Length: 106
Image (cartoon, rainbow, N blue to C red; front, side, top):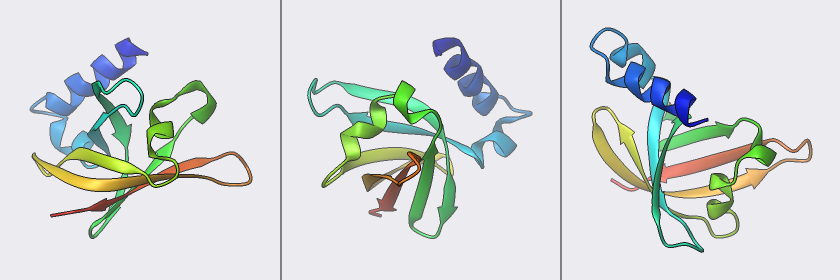
């Protein structure tokens, strides 16, 4: 998986593909609840005003979104070339799909 993430980050940083890729891929940075470590990972997103929606693909194979169950937690997203903070909450529907909703703070 780290190879895929590295490829996505390289595309996002490229002069040719960076703009189009950045409209659909952002970097989420958060602090793990149990470890206290800071993590960053690329994720696909949709944005409507101050609300960012992240659909988690293959949620059973990933664990990062579990940091935002219940009351949720603080995240930082790289949007429009700058860091934006917000509060993220994760929701799993009846079909097992997971969505993380971020309400931007600033």
